[in-house]
Length: 513
Image 1: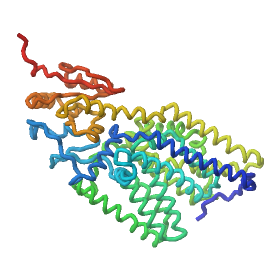
Image 2 (image 1 turned 30 degrees about the vertical axis):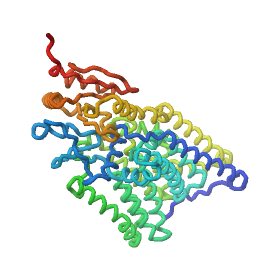
Image 3 (image 1 turned 90 degrees about the vertical axis):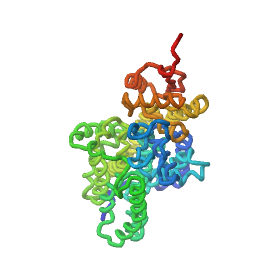
Image 4 (image 1 turned 120 degrees about the horizontal axis):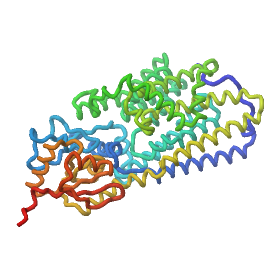
């Protein structure tokens, strides 16, 4: 089981200079602490869009009886004349047999939020602690994994740095979303699985980490292929792995059965139509284009030379190949992966594999160069250029301002709570998950209703004396005014980039004399 390239590295001045090593170690430690502080201060910890609010609302549901949320009732609107589907906020699904909403999103990240909540004064701020821990864990685990696969310390540190400033990683680690969490548990599973060669009992920890990763994102089950390759034919390690993963599997089966009525049923419903060969050509080009830009050509292109290492490091090549291709090969069939660059977050757990592959190739290349100066300074120059590329890309996407933009959700909630009657019915879509988390307002989804449903809602609100408001992003307004009719709507105010409208029902206006 050979893991390291056979080419010996030329002697480095760093290895013979203790003072320089100490200074660089202190610098790395300070940069690491600064990075954690950056994540701490820039994390958008709000229950904002569908993903962020979905995970927070799921965390709340875990504390509710039956793991469901009752549907807010509107007098005069009950099935079969009314469908509670019209009232489900983003991140929820109307339960077919109960007057309740169930969660759409996986349970893993919400469990992390609940675990962090007691340390930060409540669930509202849990994402800050979770993201800081995930950021630190990812960099440390990638460093350890690089060392396990034969990279010298400076090269392993370079791998952590390349992940730390990758725009897609920054996008994920500054939001309350599952992508960074799934990546960390992927790294943890592989690091722990590789340790089974020291003692088979490490298989238990690997199984536990793997089960948590599947709870965070069900498609992390794809990691079983590279993990199986690592464990090989070590029966005791496999038994330990299965025992470690058993509690997570049992919990997931219980949760799915309790919430969705089936051991293997999830909140996503039927998604088979989103996978198909017809999406492969577009997604393939999309993957090439954005991996090139997000990981830089200095990482993306060398990774293709990974087969070059087959002779000196066959085990490593197969492991990285199975790891990367498991995720990339699955999601290349998925429609949403090719929609925009940030949907590559689905394959973020494979990004460390690409980074490690590139570094192993680059290390072997520079090891073979006859000029010591080229070996010493060539990698440094490439790393500086690659990091500069990634930092510039991060700035061009304005990722460091994520928190400022997402705060608009919370500000709109605060304005509505201060200026709108508590019995108001709110027509929403994009902000519906946030309002479901932070408020007790009754929500109706304008984008799910047809004209007859809108007429029934107006009549019920008129009969019970309940005002109707709408809280909309700019892109929602034309559709609402077109689908439901523009008559009666009046713009009240604008909270950042969210508009508040009030509906004046013409049928409720007394006739003029």
